[in-house]
Figure 1 (cartoon, rainbow, N blue to C red):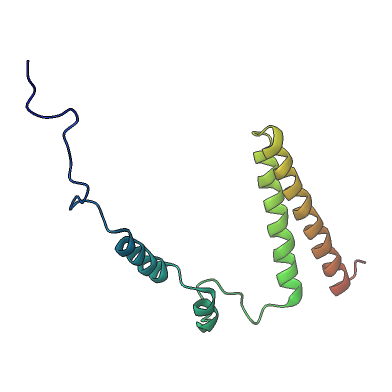
Figure 2 (spheres, rainbow, N blue to C red):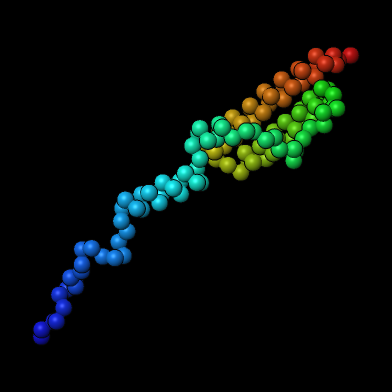
Length: 119
């Protein structure tokens, strides 16, 4: 039996559906420049502070440090609750984070002691 077309069929090497690589690269560069600005562009952009989350400028140092100590203690409790559900490297990493939080809490408590010495 004679087959009228070759297997696979011959195709034109200059297919209209294949993109021109130079044009594709140029388009990709333009897209990257729009979505990912250069470091020079980032540094030239003026910083505009966001006031969505602000700390009361009238808060005393003691109030701020007390809040810091309480926040660090809460983070430490959350980390220890998560540690119970992990094994291996993830558990060790979380315990390392817990140690860093504990050191920050100790430091904040020392600052509190200097602001308002105990008894």
